[in-house]
Image 1 (cartoon, rainbow, N blue to C red):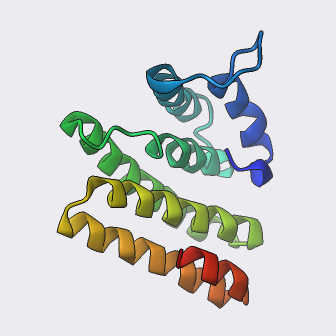
Image 2 (cartoon, one colour; image 1 turned 135 degrees about the vertical axis):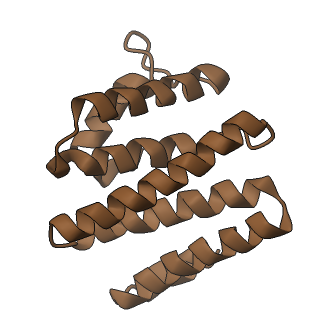
Image 3 (cartoon, rainbow, N blue to C red; image 1 turned 90 degrees about the vertical axis):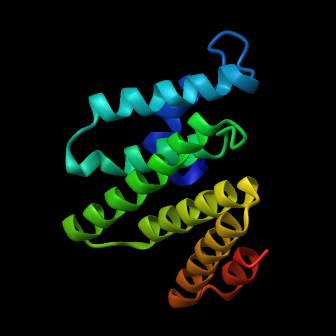
Length: 152
């Protein structure tokens, strides 16, 4: 999770690390816990003012999708669609502020990474598209350093 996600960071911690020893969950358990986080957030935080939690949970989970597994890859595609859809709803609902722009950039980076890992020509083109969207968003808000990092 990204540290400046505020309440989401606190919420996601219990799905990412053991409450006793504080170590991060590993491998498949980590992925399964993140999928549980999506289900929890979708059920408990339906109101528009909390929709960013739905985006954050998918952003963190898509980074762990097994792109070699066709079923998981399909779920990853569904996460992409949901994240983009919810972000558009949020833009219509409220003024998009700097914190939201950081969220949007982190989502574009996560989507870019997802497509990059699939390694087909089509997916690599999608990866590049989302990487460019992140870069352009940084430039739009005057963060040239962020734009350079977004270009990798």
